[in-house]
Length: 157
Image (cartoon, rainbow, N blue to C red; front, side, top):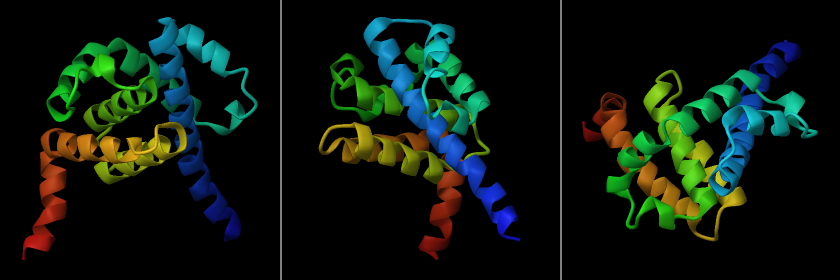
C-alpha cells in the first residue's frame, strides 16, 4: 500500500521538477535566444534531470518558445507594463503557466497557479509571487472561464 502512495506522488514531483527546469530553460532562452532542442540538451546534463517528467518538459519548452508571441498577447491585458519590462524569471513563469492553462485542460487551473506562485517564491523577486498570482487569476477567468465559474458557483449559494 505504501508503494502505491509513492507511485502516486512521483508524477506530481516529477512534473513540478519539469516546471522548474522549464523556467530555467525559458530564462536561458530569454537571455540567449537558443532553441528548445539545444536548451533541452543542456538541461539533460543537470544532476536532477532524471527525476523529472521529460515529456512534459519538452512539451512546455517547445510550446512556450513556439507560441511566445501569442502567449504574450494572452497575458498582456493583465500586466501593468510591457512584457519586455518584466523580469526574465517572472516572464518565464507567466509564459509557462499561460501555456499550461491554454493547452493542458487536464491540469486544474488552481494547480497551475499554485505551481507558478511557488516557482515565483523560489526564483523570482521579493513580491514577484503576488504579481504572478494576480496575473494568473485574471487569466484563468478568461482562459478557463467554465472551470473558474464552476468553482465559484458553490460559494455563491
